[in-house]
Image (cartoon, rainbow, N blue to C red; front, side, top):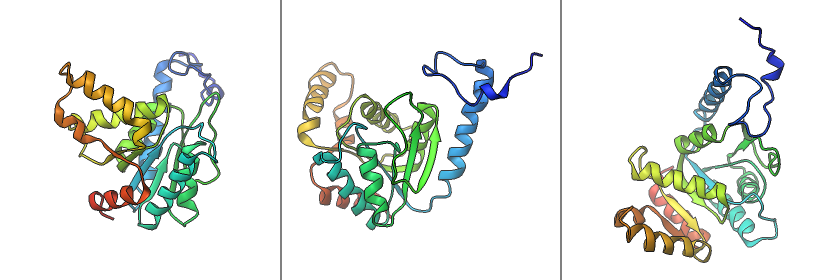
Length: 227
């Protein structure tokens, strides 16, 4: 059997799902190790976790950044741990809010060829190469999902959570969209197109809540996720 240069396993190029410096069979062990590390680490957390996600491109002077920071701080003070994707923007804001009040501030960072590096406000860091492994960690260990304004990644995580709850693959949990102005067009399209074509049931719309202020979100989480 041909020897494997293990130095080459440590770093994969971008387009990691298409290309690999080693064969797919060897990449399987990298994937398995990410699952094991994630499960082992997150299973030690002894507070209920709330995921806050949104755009990595949101600047600190943006109202959404300040909202996420305040929201995470309020939730941490109420006894919840905050879990984010670990990068800049909304993720940084949420980690900052939790850390500054002494709360659990988890960052599940993803290796990207550009845009993301771990923010400075994480006190429980984990690093991932594969998006699908990281998403399993979010879905398994979070008891509520809060989606701030974001882009394709935020939509991916939003619809993943909706799909898992809709198909009863996971227990129902709060899925909250922040910003009725931002999300209103998407929700109107879902109602107009999905419902009219019969691709979802009317009750599926009840899986989503839209909220615009911190106090309402915190009170809703307190009612549905017991500390």
